[in-house]
Length: 400
Figure 1 (cartoon, rainbow, N blue to C red):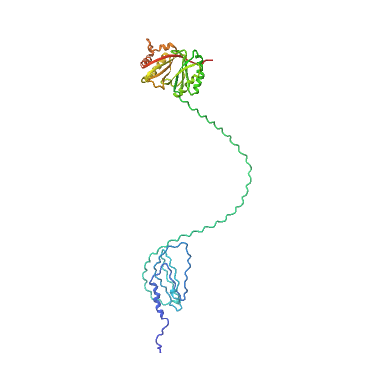
Figure 2 (cartoon, rainbow, N blue to C red):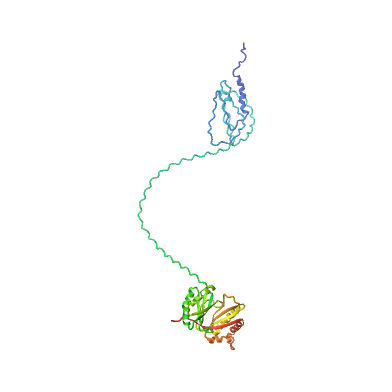
């Protein structure tokens, strides 16, 4: 039998433990990245995770972060409530670079509210371990756009035919100047003289002379030489002897072609040639001319004295020509031989034989106006081994 004065016990005594359970969430700080979980209501259905679309690129593996389980404030369990262990797990929280402000806990619905016990002071939050930053996923390749349909071109309007234009008159072509003909190559200088002695048959000079001056001179020019002169003997030579001189560009050309001057005439009995080079004169192979007596003087001089001989001659000529009226055309020296003596030939024209005799240095009364020239002739005589002179007439083409 019970005493009516005893206080009646209500079935809600187990709720006295609720304040402790409600104060438990303040002990551990909430995870900054995760939103606070709503209190699980009685008879809560299992939470299905949201479907996640698979990414084409596999993310870099992330080590799971050791996180303290977040306490969930719950109302007093009803007998029919599903155990919390069977609830579906929430997806792992994604790391956030910067911490968000701690959200305030949502108030408990009035129907489930219980008298709150005095909350204990919150313990200082422990610093979270740095979370590894997930490598950014590679962007998916953009799908190629489908080519747009090509527009159908509209038919172009046919252009109106243009009126035919009159052709412009063409400008007259300027006459092109004719190309100048290429200059002929200059002939080689003539430096070698062929001095040829000629003997003709008895009393045949009249015929042979014209053949040599005509056909012979043309044959020499055709072969590349030049006809220089023909002399017929007067004093010192036979009346059937003479001298033919031609000029050539080389010793070989002179030897090969010098006889062309003879024109193979049947009245030429014999000939003999010397090959000469010019010394102090002449500068050019200009053929001699003019009336007068032509003296051909031949000197034999030792080779060691040849240059001295030539120098003395050249020094005497100007005064000699001025005083006696003579003309020195050439002083040739023989070439192409191996003798110990040099042979030189002096070709001089005198006005007459009187001028020739007056110019002798050995005269007892030499001309005082030519003293210097005659003195050099004396010195030249001292180095001369031998000498011979003959005079001749310069042949000229006949008037007929």
